[in-house]
Image 1: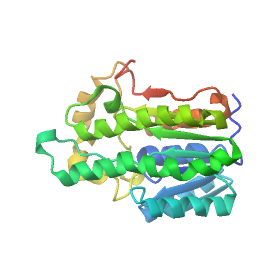
Image 2: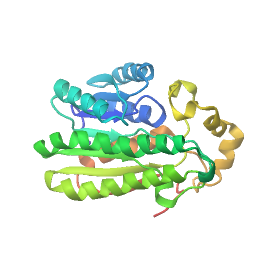
Image 3: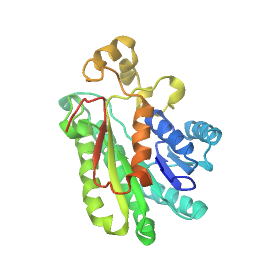
Image 4: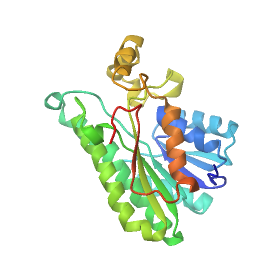
Length: 265
């Protein structure tokens, strides 16, 4: 399969940990010019070194807070200044802490909305002018099966991810005439293999989310999936790379679950 990604300029937000790290490295193996837009600078630099070792044409990290418009604009302008353009954007940043809706503090709701929805809005808008001018581009956003079905203890997170799906479809209709494609990948539960795969600011670094990493809990979770295993970051990465590539040049406005059959729709 010809992906034709070599030499392209690719931004991966939150590319330093777990799924974002796997996506960054998958693109690196396609010999792209990779930019990791990451709030955790130390973790991003580790992944930059890995990306360079795995074949990236170049790899750079940029400290970025996707919830802040000014931070996103500065990051995108920097990439355009270095590489001339942005060919691919992967909106990967995501965050949640499972809790019943009535038990969450407003601060958690606001953080979920800022990172999961506003982050995607900010980054998508920031790259579109350049893509429209060039009449080409691909945007892949990370949704969640929670956003397709609603998920217990993930109310606001699910609402944000449903927003990511709907916005991707709406914008895909608007900008398809310019050769720009937007698609969504929805992971199921995808737990990092080790602490080396995440930074201290990752949602998986919190004590509450670490409970999902025990063998007993993972065995319980796996029973909910027809394929009887929990997803690996690499499973999601391959789908994201495909949707960003020329091999998917006639695919836009679509939502692909990579969740072992947790949802089938």
